[in-house]
Length: 279
Image (tube, one colour):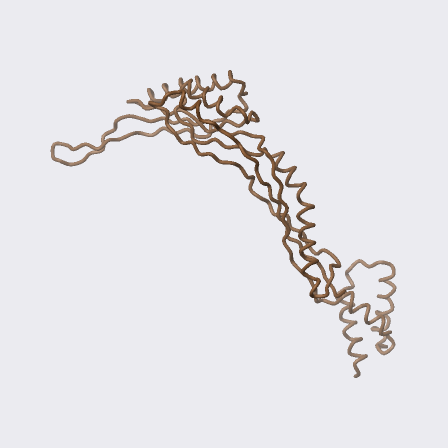
């Protein structure tokens, strides 16, 4: 059997594998020609041009290039998050809880009077645990003795009043808060998503340009797209940890501390697989 017949056999196999693919009207006409020739075993009658077209269309080998693309933009934060609260200690759990609740209610009232809504304030952590001290008994052995209870009630404040960080902290501390754990300036979910979505096209263009540059010395070109993956990113934020206790500190010491926010960088990353062929 000559090479012409061998190629015809290959075409017959490829036809069977590709039969389930939806074809255009012209492809169906080509399919009909090949099928009739294969079924009648007239493999010598299949035109070489037809063989070439089928090999080119259904060649199982894929030539691809995988590229990553990146796009970055800067934006000012539009959301302020402050984590603060009240810690109380007393001889009994009830006393500690009562003292803590009174102080916390005073803090919340002060915050709402300063312009925050109740929706801006949420409890992020609450804990109550016993406190012990170690003492020696008459036999010289160390014993753990219950000395009281500590209650901690922490609030998370999130607002778009990003220029009011100092005023919010002042109001909370003045009314009884003795812990400020964190101050951060963030992008709201809506703003972050909009900027990230706007960067997708730029990231894909970046991937395309990289692929085109890589293909120049290979004398290849992009002929299609196999897949695009958009990578989710963590929302960036400026974090200024401020874990502190205000017992014994003058209230004015907080007022003198400037709290400033800076621009945030948002990055969108994509992975693109391109089909390629010779130029």
